[in-house]
Every structure is written in C-alpha cells, then in structure tokens.
Amino acid sequence: MQLQLDQTDYRILMLLSENARIPWKDLGEQIHMTGQAVGNRIKKLEEHGVISAYSLMIDEMKLGLTCTAFVLIFMKTAHHDLFIRFVQERDEVVEAHRISGDGCYHLTIKAASNEQLNQFLDKLLEHGNYRLNLSIHKIKHRHALNAIPTNQT
Image (cartoon, rainbow, N blue to C red):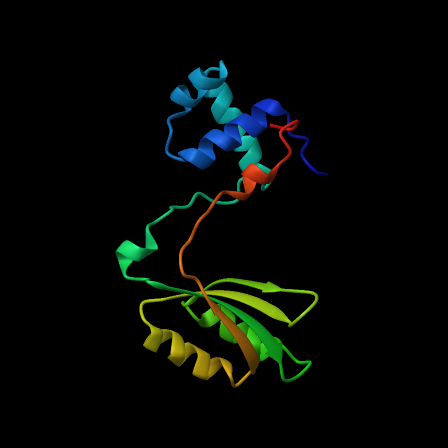
C-alpha cells in the first residue's frame, strides 16, 4: 500500500532536502508543528521508504573531480550482466540508466583527469561502443523533489 502524502509531508521533505540536519524542533517551527509531531511524520516517511537515506552534497571540483563525462553505451551483446557488474564496481560511474531510444545505457562519469577517464573508457570498450560528451560547465543541479507539481507541495 502506497503512503498518501499531504502538503505537510511535502513541506517536511522540501525542508529536509535543503538541510537534512535541521533539528525537528526548528523544522516544526517553520511548519507550525511540534518537534515530536515532525519526528513522527519523518519516521513514517522513513518506514514507508519515502525517505530512503540521508546524503551529503559536495563540491566535486574542490575534491579534484574536474572531469564530468556523459557516456551513451551501445552494447555488443544482448547479455548485459557483465556490463552491469562492471558499472556497479567502478567508482567513476556516479549514475547509470538503462534507456530507450538511441543506445542501451547512459552513464555519468566523474574523473580527476582526462587520463583517468581514458583508462575507464578503454575498459568500457570490452562491453560495447560508446559516444562521449564532456561537461564544460554545470548550470543547474536540483533535487528531484523540486519536480513535484506545486499543487502537491
């Protein structure tokens, strides 16, 4: 059974997406609830899997990950198990999607250098061909929660 979220739940999610470390009391003050009531709602959201984890946003450039690549994969075979295992084991792959349309998979790669990216691409050729696009400048990054229609939040 899917949990039905109300506007208060969406507001809690929005505030947590901005600062997951906000004390429940402070969050409650912003939405006119007690900290305990907020905590109960958060626990319900966690139990139903709406909140699956709390994460950290970092400045990748400051960590030396200066190269962002988007890779479209064209598989050599219909058996993708080895490729999927390869992708899951590679730290450079920060996001991977099975896609429809042109190509089979879309990967987002983060690397510290073109050399590191090239080494990854050499290994990738064992699984299929690819088309590569390099990011010149990130212009937008938002949490998926922001895509929910405004009449629900």
